[in-house]
Image (cartoon, rainbow, N blue to C red; front, side):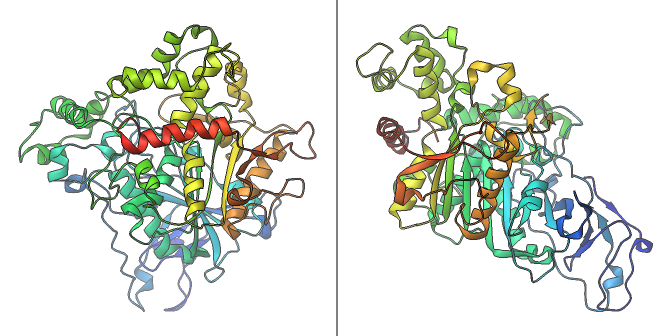
Length: 563
């Protein structure tokens, strides 16, 4: 963990009630711990300065007996009045270690990773009650690193001001290992429970940074967008949620493992580690295994197939999210949902020239589902997406047909579906979008992918795009026409966090974003031709797209095809 205790000489306490200080930067005293952050200002003025606090623990390290269990709350007992001098200030000016990624590599990432990061206006103080945005990263539930998603711009550009938080959560086998043995002596969906623990930490502590625990928005993309949905449907909506609003981008779900697959993945892990695959010694053995053995075992399960899954009627995820949404078993929160125009091109399984026949479409689109998809369902899908040249077909090529199918099965329908069900439940502040501006770096590499998956996060996070494995990433400066896209989307997102309406504090050049219940449409976020603004506008969601989405969401609600 990249945290270092400062010696007491690095701070001063002039009285029993005086504030802790440090020459290293601003200090936030939580009562049970105190952290010093790092301040940056683009103008040199305090009013534009943002202070970052990194690697703050939000739960006990999930080590030893806590491995493969729900996170355990920290001891947050405040230091007794008069004993403030005993409280050390922790250096939080850097990022904490990321959770172990896949492909797993010894020495890369850490089990001790239940950490979060906070950005605040430097002059924000307790009592300011600023809205809070909490970001949950994507990465297929097997990879992801908060350092790839810096939220400095969200705070510096916000008007009115907000607090931003990003959280880490356990991934792959460390966060989502399941089997009969885990059910008997452990917890399913530990990674989702980590997210919830971080949100509860925000409820208890964000006021000390100047935030309002009653005005929390959660946001995420891909697996992060799926996480947002699962936080919304958690416990079937039976309990209070520690947030008021939610933004889900390119909601990324894949096939839910069958019980047989779950048991096979568990046996893969125990076999590599050298533990029994069943019986009372299986879990204690895994909890005592070396981290090196578990890293090796993580690479012996299919990437992305150890993931969230229903954990019973009394569990965090009592059913598939699509089923919970269908039955109205979710929490009523203000909501933005959407996807990239060509998310499906990233996951269709080939380039345009690979799709010539119906067989090509069926093989490549449904390959990731394996035996989960019946031949009858494939025939239904092909009929629902008529081949090019067929009367009434909207598809110019087999590739267009294939990527549209891949997109709507996985990424393009659940945002509309949840928005529609939220509206049915009477939530007024519901909004839908289509992000229509490509990541220029990825576009140069594969022009045929268009506005591919992750294009939106390029503009939300400083021109970030992925590079090497283990959450490798780089950043690229925006050009003159990209700057307005960056400013527009951040203004929409932070305005929603402040008021529940993305248009309240929008940029002057941006169109008004109409609510979903009113428009039955969505905002199309599009780059303009010059530096003065964007070409964004509202559109009505096409009826044929809605009909295809109804098919997939109905299917998901009645089968184990996907989550």
